Image 1 (cartoon, helix red, strand yellow):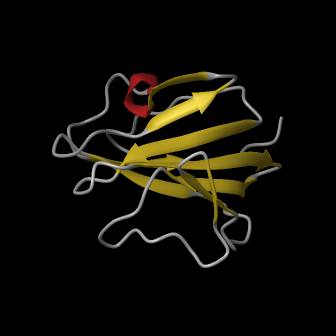
Image 2 (cartoon, helix red, strand yellow):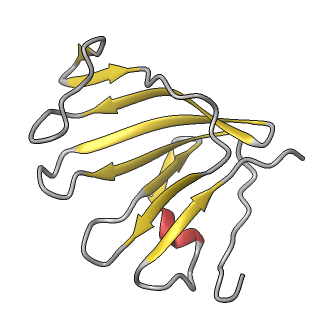
Image 3 (spheres, helix red, strand yellow):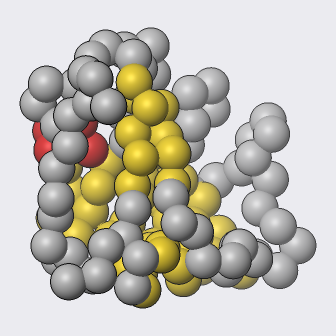
Length: 119
């Protein structure tokens, strides 16, 4: 694909984190790479607000809502990189950094696709 930028990360699980653009509340999703798919194992919301109520089965622990989204394995996750909101963070092995740091030539506005790949 013309203009595409890619990166390969040797990880088998990660947390995708972001800040809600209006409420400024952190969201986190834990994902595991399973073959060529991504499986969500848990999600957390560090509060609630407009359009971001936790699901009914969520449990509050230490001020954070914890729950397990009911999603089938995903072939691809798509997130939007934009200068108008705080960027996504990718966390692995206890270290978080902006997702865009893995893609230094990314355009100001771009769709980032996360995929699993088997080794």
